[in-house]
Amino acid sequence: MKSIAIITYKDAPNLSPSDAVLVKIFERENINSTPILWDSDTDWSQFESLIIRSCWDYHTRVAEFRNWCLMLKVKQITVWNPIDIVLWNHEKTYLKDLEVKGAKIIPTRWYEKGSLIDLKNIFKETGFEKIIIKPTIGASAHGVLLMDRNNAENMQAEVNLALENSGIMIQPFIKEVQTGGEISLMFAGKEYTHAIVKFPKPGHHVGIYDATVRLIEPDAAIIKEAKRIVEMIDAPILYARVDGMITAGGFILNELELIEPYLFFDLYPKGAEKFVEALESL
Image (tube, rainbow, N blue to C red; front, side, top):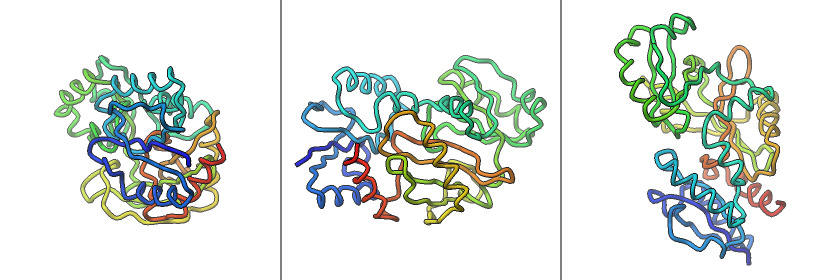
């Protein structure tokens, strides 16, 4: 019997509803899977492989998480997705690499930690009416700010504080998210399995979503574009989630999640079956 560690964190010791479906498939396939906290004192060599699923506090403990990843690499522990991919993907600057390869991303201005910026000048230079400011290392809506040109002066101190703690990225607010939502396309290996759409909560912005999530079947062109983005990863992977919005110019990438994305197996159990098939083929 294969033995696998499913990596989680302290607030989800028994895994998410999505990954609970995955465990059932593992059991059916005679694979022994054990949920383990990423920061626990564990002999990782006892497992054939580790599957990172819900280490959802890594962005608040960046140095610890990086050290854990490097320890696994030094000890040559098999991890999915691979440690080099995880280290590349944990900071949103990976989007620069994907843009170079031809992915269409949201127009972004990048600022390193400690930078000095003037929000009023940014609005003047870009012509944007609303902007989203995100930390370059973050998850969900942690540290995300929405502002318009009318409150730029009032928000300057908050942005200064953000830059003391991390790098940031500044993007225009994509209004289509309010009407079309954000689409997430799931991949097992590099093969598309299923997709969902979610909408921002009323009065909120991208990153803070309503509880309503539903399965969709995107147009073939959207699936093709998402797969093209996944294929830009020049390494074997077990899973991926491509998040983006449909605009007048087509699909635009928000994030390519390769570390700990929720994969919505609770809405589409066949996706968990494809996940296990992909694992067994690696």
